[in-house]
Image 1 (cartoon, rainbow, N blue to C red):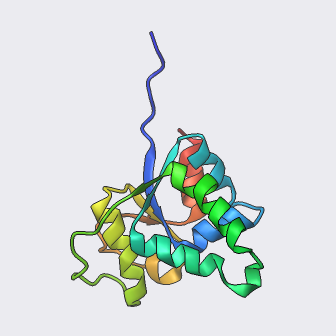
Image 2 (cartoon, rainbow, N blue to C red):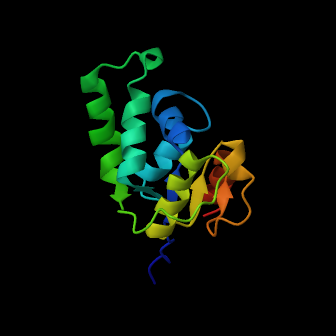
Length: 143
């Protein structure tokens, strides 16, 4: 008898969570191990990808263009599924910039949105569960 396969978690990561996982040691960086091991599928939309590129380009991170390109090509894209949004009309979050995460999760049939953003974590009616990094790491450790 073969081992029962465990279904991957499909998740949309808030831009700050992705950037933190890529650039800093600590709890959030452990998410990267899970997506590289195939236990977590990243769901991205063109809007989230563009925001990620913009944030990685901030002067405070001191990343050269080539370093950003390498991070995206080697650490993100091989583990991500890009989805195109059907509609962006419905508003979920107080901050309209947060709606892209919910729309992406719905379009990509994500199991969760992973965020550290208090406004997203407080949402109760987004139709996609919104979890903290700690909650997802706990869930992944039990699988």
